[in-house]
Length: 73
Image (spheres, rainbow, N blue to C red):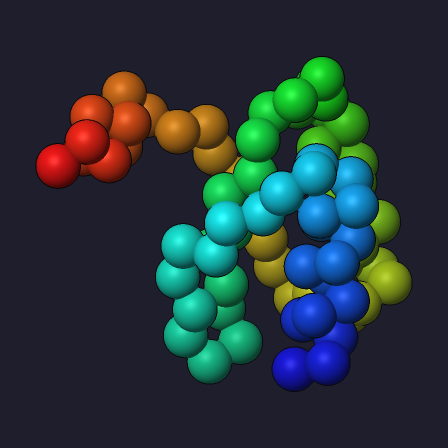
Protein backbone atom coordinates (compact mmCIF):
# COMPACT_ATOMS: atom_id res chain seq x y z
CA UNK A 1 0.00 0.00 0.00
CA UNK A 2 2.92 2.34 0.69
CA UNK A 3 3.99 1.97 -2.95
CA UNK A 4 0.49 3.04 -4.01
CA UNK A 5 0.88 6.32 -2.15
CA UNK A 6 4.24 6.89 -3.83
CA UNK A 7 2.64 6.40 -7.24
CA UNK A 8 -0.17 8.82 -6.37
CA UNK A 9 2.37 11.39 -5.15
CA UNK A 10 4.27 11.08 -8.45
CA UNK A 11 1.06 11.49 -10.45
CA UNK A 12 0.14 14.62 -8.47
CA UNK A 13 3.63 16.05 -8.97
CA UNK A 14 3.40 15.50 -12.73
CA UNK A 15 -0.26 16.32 -13.42
CA UNK A 16 -1.17 18.73 -10.62
CA UNK A 17 -4.13 16.75 -9.34
CA UNK A 18 -5.37 13.19 -9.32
CA UNK A 19 -8.88 11.91 -8.68
CA UNK A 20 -9.32 8.37 -7.34
CA UNK A 21 -12.30 6.93 -9.21
CA UNK A 22 -12.22 3.34 -7.99
CA UNK A 23 -10.13 1.12 -5.73
CA UNK A 24 -10.35 -2.64 -5.20
CA UNK A 25 -7.55 -4.75 -3.73
CA UNK A 26 -4.47 -3.77 -5.74
CA UNK A 27 -6.39 -2.14 -8.59
CA UNK A 28 -6.82 1.60 -8.80
CA UNK A 29 -8.61 3.79 -11.31
CA UNK A 30 -7.42 7.40 -11.42
CA UNK A 31 -8.51 10.42 -13.39
CA UNK A 32 -5.76 12.86 -14.30
CA UNK A 33 -6.09 16.08 -16.30
CA UNK A 34 -4.61 16.16 -19.78
CA UNK A 35 -2.73 19.44 -19.16
CA UNK A 36 0.05 19.95 -21.70
CA UNK A 37 1.19 16.31 -21.98
CA UNK A 38 0.88 14.13 -25.08
CA UNK A 39 -0.44 10.57 -25.04
CA UNK A 40 3.08 9.42 -25.93
CA UNK A 41 4.45 11.18 -22.86
CA UNK A 42 1.75 9.58 -20.73
CA UNK A 43 2.50 6.03 -21.86
CA UNK A 44 6.25 6.56 -21.44
CA UNK A 45 5.60 7.96 -17.99
CA UNK A 46 3.45 4.95 -17.06
CA UNK A 47 6.16 2.57 -18.31
CA UNK A 48 8.66 4.34 -16.05
CA UNK A 49 6.31 4.03 -13.06
CA UNK A 50 5.69 0.38 -13.94
CA UNK A 51 9.40 -0.41 -13.71
CA UNK A 52 10.09 1.63 -10.56
CA UNK A 53 7.09 0.42 -8.56
CA UNK A 54 6.70 -3.10 -10.00
CA UNK A 55 3.24 -2.36 -11.43
CA UNK A 56 2.01 -5.50 -13.15
CA UNK A 57 -0.23 -3.85 -15.71
CA UNK A 58 -1.88 -0.55 -16.48
CA UNK A 59 -4.29 0.93 -18.96
CA UNK A 60 -5.14 4.42 -20.12
CA UNK A 61 -8.08 5.85 -21.98
CA UNK A 62 -9.60 9.21 -22.71
CA UNK A 63 -12.85 10.20 -21.06
CA UNK A 64 -15.78 9.52 -23.37
CA UNK A 65 -18.56 12.01 -24.00
CA UNK A 66 -20.95 9.62 -22.23
CA UNK A 67 -18.76 9.66 -19.11
CA UNK A 68 -18.66 13.45 -19.16
CA UNK A 69 -22.45 13.69 -19.49
CA UNK A 70 -22.98 11.09 -16.74
CA UNK A 71 -20.92 13.30 -14.45
CA UNK A 72 -23.69 15.93 -14.58
CA UNK A 73 -26.30 13.61 -13.05
